[in-house]
Length: 319
Image (cartoon, rainbow, N blue to C red; front, side, top):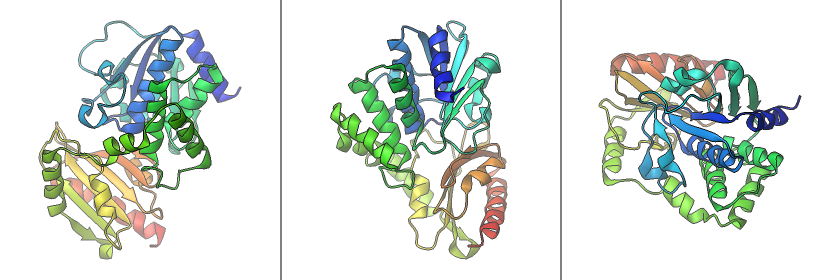
């Protein structure tokens, strides 16, 4: 049976849903979560939107419905019968939310990562899609549900975020057509771009300067790495991209200390080195050009382990 039809039947037949996305939710993860909530509301379903980490409200405060998303702290107000996991390649990326999922057969996995582990009872995984929000658009269409301005804003945001403002190679004609349709519904591309890519708090800029001061190069300048060795609540999304701007750098890494002693590692590539394979060695995942994972240990140990994996990948790629 077609996976899209199975997904639509799964949503029609359930009544009480848990909606979740990956740890440190980004623009596509949050936007697809909110769009899915709007979809279920239209269908008269009950749902809870849960994430493992605090929501970065400052950057994404323009998204409608964001206050409805809550962090996984304590028991749920009611027990969900089914779950929809969005934009998440494997269950490890869900963090503590994994404990709240119903049995595997009652999980719908909606994603576009090529390394998805197909952990759901139903797996609507489309690596050719620009974003999970693009897949949500297909679900709305298949269910015959019209899109309003709020849904359009979420879908446009997810596509814009995962295509890097329509700069990355996953910017397909389909993604551009959908984005255009969302603009017809009232989305302001300039406002979304400003919120996603062009605004940071003064403290976030100070932390960026601190991270860049740690910049070091490896593999003859082909690998660049920055780090922050203290826990910060500031939004650091995009810091790693600054390293990839350096001439000659093919792989960029950003290590950020988290509560509990682990480091969140963000990885970027110009394309020849598939960083999702590097992240996968540590239980993470993502795309060939953008991925992430968590590494335990002090800063020296975390750097050593990540560099070892990067060096091996660089050698294998022959760059």
